[in-house]
Image (cartoon, rainbow, N blue to C red; front, top):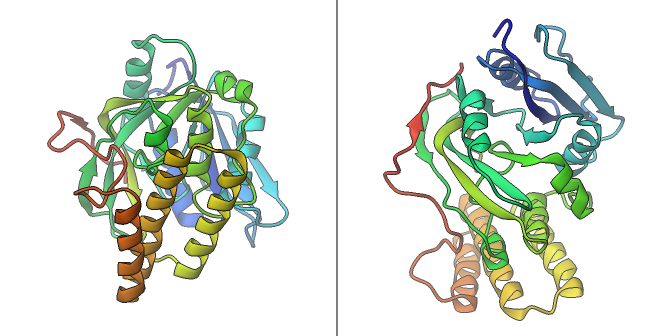
Length: 299
């Protein structure tokens, strides 16, 4: 990495606890063969506060910003975006990490593409368990319509997107800090209504730790809050129906993994009635057997 010009990308890492996982995420950025212009860690009210002194970032500027109270992922990402100084931004959840040599390859592919407006550049990822074993890979399909963005966050925006900072800020749309779940779904749907499109870079660039433990009550509460918000701001009934159907899928999954099978079935049924389909997924989903460049994981 020594002597390599930095890429014009700010890496924004929201963190709440997870000290050891955060250090792994930081190391995966620092050891890239082409460094980002800066790393921004947003400590979202961790107690004790996040300590990054054990990670030497070398010549990469590292900024640690702290919220005195836990305000949620949306607020942490907004704080990071406001602080970022580079032309491009990319998020990385603190319990995920970059694959070896992946950042330079992503930038090479982004630089080769042209187009106007707000483009969200996604990549593929490896799904891993807590022990670091890879369970599979996913490469998201592209999208260019709001109804697709209302159908889910299949492109894992918490760690797998790169966006032009000015294009994002020019929309005046920030992540909704009132939401403690699905804030990425809400944000990207709002951006898509301003013309945002999703393009996929053909490589597996991030390792994402799988989590299935979610409180069904909290998922259902947030789903209702999102629907109330969108009913107040949109009269597009097909869009609202699709959004409701996707949120029902999330509620069904949360209840299923909590052992509440009958309640899960009720949500599945309502989703399928709202948007009849042969698949449980509504989103463009993922390529099967895609010709993606597999990169080694950074341990």
